[in-house]
Image (cartoon, rainbow over all chains, first blue to last red):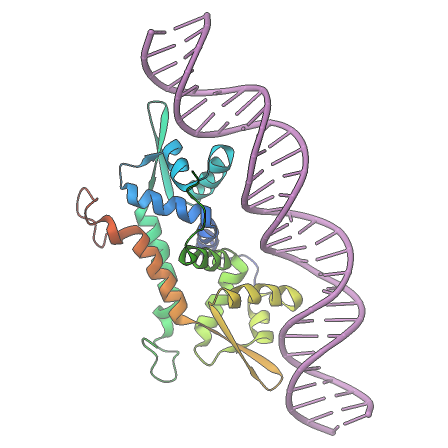
Length: 114
Length: 114
DNA sequence: ACATCATTTCTATATTTATAGAATCATGAA
DNA sequence: TTCATGATTCTATAAATATAGAAATGATGT
């Protein structure tokens, strides 16, 4: 009897987002964007700062955007990137929820904060 | 002048951990282990439950373990796996910290807890 | 229209990760 | 020791991701 027929979309989305974070380059990009604030940073400058440019940068940004962690808007001939804060926070909460939420009825002894 | 010479180990570790979470299979494994509680679950049973067995399961577990998100201990001929709660929580905090920590001087409106 | 800047797409290659069967190792029981 | 069980390693193949140069696209200023 199979048990893992169709994974919950929630899980799929989370996996995609985590995979997008699973790279030093992209984590650097995200970190830089966080420090840039809500105004965002043009792709060129972003790339200079994190040491990734051209098609490789596009490639990494595409993953962050399609995972919903970064948004882009055009301004003149540049494209500004910003962090999707709510998404990142949501992901963080997902992680906490996975770990601690429903352990209230499962734990055998005390195990609230290790 | 190069800017991205040696990435901070913190970033490397985080990227490894996120990459370990960036798969539905491994996310399912983690979720199942969370529900198993601190006693842990033998690999065989774990695999049955999430629909991944044999060498593939070993492969996924290896990543979770080496990322520090799962721990293993032997009991008889079985190996019990448990979630490293502190690690997962730490990762969750890392994410929050990346997003919100130093935005105190940067944010335009209020954005403390959404 | 033309030149220029910013970014993407195209194309190709290298590297990593995923999947899986078979053989092997490790533990405990008869 | 021999056997059965639980898990890993070995080997091979498929698929996804990373890197990168060149060409193409889109936007702006002259």
